[in-house]
Length: 169
Image (cartoon, rainbow, N blue to C red; front, side, top):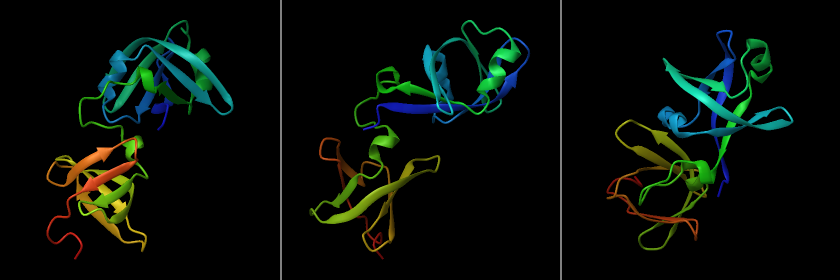
């Protein structure tokens, strides 16, 4: 399991008072409102930054870091990635999972036969779709709905699925 999650990438500065525009890499940019500190990684350097304020503009998040009040101080962070620890991440409800924890999970059918590994998650709007690559290289698509996804066992790194009619055709 991942112990840290990337939540954004600094694309550019914003204004002259030390704010930055962040392209969010999280599925819910609204989460930035609850985050108080991030780890900023830029090349080989890493530092903890406290967030002073959060604003939104179009598809971007505008952050102001505590103690940085000038465009020249944040210019060097362009292209840096922002990370949070698992303990600071949004708490999940029952039957909710971080996508990164599902990647490469073993997928088995209800009868116990191995189907493949979860290699991608497609966001379709209505529900996510899990892409499972078989050992033969074929891709199977499973909608992330209760009728299809029967069980997720994080300790075993295993997902049990119901094979709907026509799925293997």
